[in-house]
Length: 245
Ligand SMILES: Cc1cc2nc3c(=O)[nH]c(=O)nc-3n(C[C@H](O)[C@H](O)[C@H](O)COP(=O)(O)O)c2cc1C
Image 1 (tube, rainbow, N blue to C red):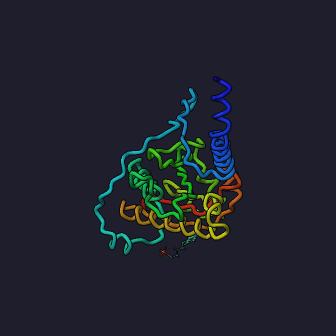
Image 2: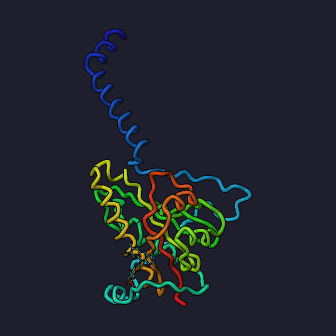
Image 3: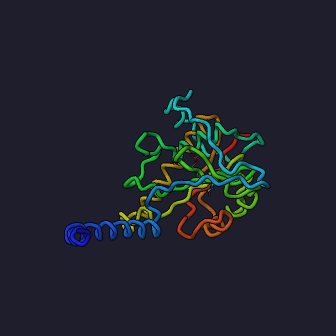
């Protein structure tokens, strides 16, 4: 009886079984090479000696503001002179949401993305450390403790506003998330997406009464080193943000 069932299984279902295994292995292989599947972020336990929270849950972003879109666009100007006042968590939350926040239940974001492949990553450089934005759950994880703004200024060819800003937002791109579908043209798409994310950040800063400037002059490899990024992640923008002096 058992032999008969096994024989039946081998004859009828085995090819399907093998096909499923091949598909699963292909997905796992492509994902390990290209990071295409959405990642489930494991909540790490806070180490006893950690001075800051490992994961920061950001305040809910506002979806109604006081400044009109037209006024915001009109007022945007690159600002390179900042006073010492720091941004609060509500303002940082709002800026990160504008950059890459999830804006609907299907997981689509504030900024369009070719094939909805989302190749951009966003980091916040603050006085107390460097944080990586996680759109799922609107939170950020600490990746470095301490103030690196002075070092970041040097990496940005001595641009003083990088050190003076309350926060510097860094946008990076992982090309292979997009080139896997679009080939070499995907690299162009990542640049275009970084531009739209940057503009969202700049306009959000204006509507919060803040100033910002897009910085494209920096040494890529040194940003990769200081943030411990993999070679697959290319820094595309540094955006100092603060209160205008
Ligand atoms: C791709 C790109 C790279 C830029 N890089 C820098 C930079 O490294 N440093 C800087 O101070 N401004 C930088 N800017 C800002 C321009 O200098 C600024 O947008 C231009 O002077 C126009 O002024 P506005 O932004 O006030 O309209 C950059 C702008 C873009 C779009």
